[in-house]
Image 1: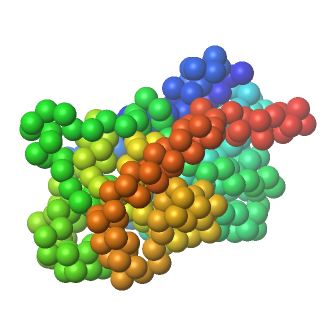
Image 2 (image 1 turned 180 degrees about the vertical axis):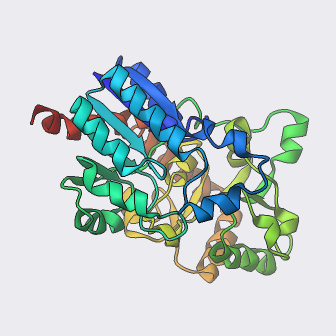
Length: 345
């Protein structure tokens, strides 16, 4: 099958994972890497202002869309798979369909209706997709109302070449990656209370916070450890006793990428109590859950005192995820199978 893939090619993004999956499955594909387009603008001081004035379009928006269309016209794909598509214009989608007859598929890793990144061109493109594969059930009804005829829940996954158990081994790594609690994710304001509560309730807690914006909180900036990708991501999880898994409420998440990556790395997860998390893990068998900062504190205190329970559940969750067809190759196969009858039609 010929697939035109549009997404972000950085090693820890879904676009890169799908590239590996397409190659492993033997499909012929062309990849348009969205992340390459903003790079020349990194030092352009008026870029952010221009982005707002242009209706959430970067200055490279037109070049990006022109290149997508050119690739489609030359490659003649059977399927166009977009992972997200914040900057893919409705006109580009319409011209690809008219010129190639390809099935247009969006794997929605974010909520397209989230005001923080939603735009008229993103919302206007929904009706032009033949298939929307949503990583969150909460957006399905809205996507249907926006005009997409085929909408399915396809959860996140893990990438086996990146997400696997790795414990710190060198003296330097053992010193750097040794924590009671480690969280890998952005410092959203609604996440601050959880970790403030932990720091206040357990003064001796070794807490590591990886990701952007943790330095914005005065109480938490001392726990800011910077970004964690690749091996650093694995070591952060391999060197901690508890790895909380929070969702983004503004994104209407029921689970997140970490819901699969934490157990894939054999770390012990305490996850925010959502319907999707409860489906994935049985409470007390594969993971623990919390619904408030107070409950998170109680669960962390308990599991820091009960190593056996924590290790047993982490091992069980690792087997459940890694033996359960939860890789991005599995997700790609699912998406292409859902698109198959649309190609035949």
